[in-house]
Image (cartoon, rainbow, N blue to C red; front, side, top):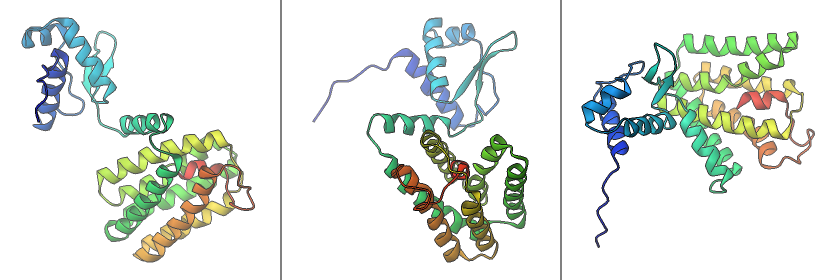
Amino acid sequence: MFTKIKTRRVFEEICEQVRQQLAAGVLRPGDKLPPERDLAATFNVSRSAVREAFRMLEMSGIVQMQKGTKGGAFICEGSADTMTQSLHDLMYLGRISVGNLAEARTLICSMVVELACERGTEADFALIQKNLDDYDRHTVQGNLQKRTETGMQFFRLVAAATRNEVLILLVDSLTEILAYVLDDIGPFDQPEVIVPIRRDILAHISDRDAVAAVEKTRRYMSIVHQRVTDPGVSSMAAPADQSIIESN
């Protein structure tokens, strides 16, 4: 029934106190933590313990270490990077499969477009439309890097219309992982297949037609994820392109 009591290491206690200050709103993104020397005196611990705490907080994505005379430990703005890396590692370790990620992305993005139909504003729709127009412009100009960056923003902009930060982070994280996998597979250059579906998704969201928006989103994901889960599928069986990488 009982287990041995484990004494928390000093640097873990420092990390926990920093997290508590964040939760209480005392520390906010952009704030600079006191210098290593001052924190060591405050906690009555060695500077090496503070240094280890900084290292752990940086690995957790809570602080960012900056060098120079104006450097130090700064509270991060927050991003999906840590979650993305964790999912990446779990995939490498065989704990989760690409199929698991693809299925989760389909479900999450279906929820996202449904909620965007309910909460999205005209300003949100205008930003998504601009994203589609920018994608076309980069395609005409032959700027593949810009096209990739623009395409990867599509579902993030749709997620932003939900006003739900958790969904935005989840979309960001799954986008980056699946884009990485697709980049390894290699692109097919058929934007004419993917872009019209994106435009249909936006049209349905703008019309507040959640059923149609979800149906198009699932169709879109089926094309993308067929390539992810079965790289041997030909472009005839599952039309795809560089924009598939960008669509994630």
